[in-house]
Length: 528
View (cartoon, rainbow, N blue to C red):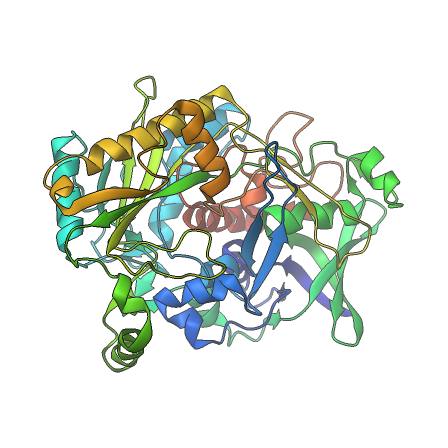
C-alpha cells in the first residue's frame, strides 16, 4: 500500500489547487489521482479546440440524463483529464456577485462570504488588466481579456448602451451588470487550464505524486475514519493510504457517487444497492443546480460572420495561421462578449448572463457545425436558477455512471426569468445599430412569441451551462452533507473541495469559484 499524508481524488480546479498548496510543504506527501489521461493534446492547447473535444474524446465523459417532464433527455459532457473540465471548456472567467457568497454565509456556510472569497480570487489571479481593489495580479492563474474587434460586436455594445446596459472593460466587479469583452483563461493564445496554472509549475516536487487513468472505486475506512482510497487501474486495483485526510474533488456528479459507494448517503438508497451504510446522509446527491438557457441566433445582412472560417479551405488556413502566428479565430475562446443584465425589475442585481459572438451554429447537429449563411449568436441563461435536480446511483458498480435527473424550469421564478431574458435579447437585437445588421431571428424564431412557446423552445432547443453544483451541500444545519470546514458530517478524515459543496449556484461560470474555494480550503486544511 502506497502511503501519503493526503490523497486528493480528482484533478479539476479543486484538486489542482490543493495539490499545489499542500505540497508546498516538502514534509507533506501528496497524491493527486485523476480518472482520465494526462492533458497532452493539441486541441486542449488551442482555445477553439474545445468544440471537438466535447463531442467525443478520451478527455471527456458523457453523462446521460433522465428524461425531464417533457420527455427530453440530455447528454452532459465533463472533463476527464488533468485540469478536469477546465481543459475542455470555453475558458470563460467570471466570479459571481457578492450576494452569491454572502447568501451562502446566511444559509450557514460560515466563513464563505464575499469578503473571504474576494481575497481568494485576488490571490489566485494574474489579471492582465492589473491589480486593484477588486482584481489580483501576480497569482498563478492568468486571466486575459478578449481583444477581438468586430463590427457585430461593436454594434452589440452600442445597442447595449442604448438600452441602459453599461459597457465595461471588466465585468468581474462587485456590480456585474454590464457587457464587454469576455474575460478568459487564455495566455499567449493558449488555454490556461487549472492544471497549467496550478499543477504544471509544481510537478517537479518530489513530495507530489500524480496518478492518471485511475478511477476511485471507494473511500476506505477504519471505523469512521477515512484512511485511503481504492483505485481501479489498468490490470486491477491499487490502494493509496492517507495518514491525514482524503480530499474529494471529483465534481458534482462523481463526488456524490463516490460518497454513496463508500457508504455515505441516503440509507434506503444505499441499502437498495447492497451497500453497507456507514453514515445515513439523506442530502447526498440532492440540491443539484445547473444553468439552463438557450442560444438565440440571428441571420446577418452582410458577410460579417465568422461562420465561413470554420469549414473547408478557410478552416485549414486558420489552422496554419494559428500554429504559425497564434492568431485568428482558432485563438478565441467560446465567445467574444460577456454580459450580465437585470431582466426582471424585482431582481436586486443581474439575473441573466449573456455570451455573444458573430457566429451561428447548425441547431441540433451531432457535432459543432456552423451555418452557411452569416449569423450571430447570443447564449443566455438565468444566473441563479432555483430548480433542483438529483444524482443517485445506477448500481453498486463503480464503473457505472450515476443517474442524473436535471429537473430544470421547475419553479415559477425560473420560468419567469427565462421568458424575460429571451424578450430582453430580442429587444437588444432590435436596437440600432445592431438591428441594422440583422435580417431575421433564426433560433428559436420570431414566431415563438407566447410565454409557453418560449419555455417550450428552451426545453426542446435549449442548452446547459455545464456548471453543475450543490450535490453535497455545505452548511451548519444537521441536514447538510459538509460542514463549513468542508468536512463530511458523521465521519473523520474526509473533506470535499469542489462545486458539489456550493449551497446555491453562483451567478457565473464555476471555474473561478471552485479555484477560490480550494485556495481557501488549503488554508483551513493546513491550519488543522
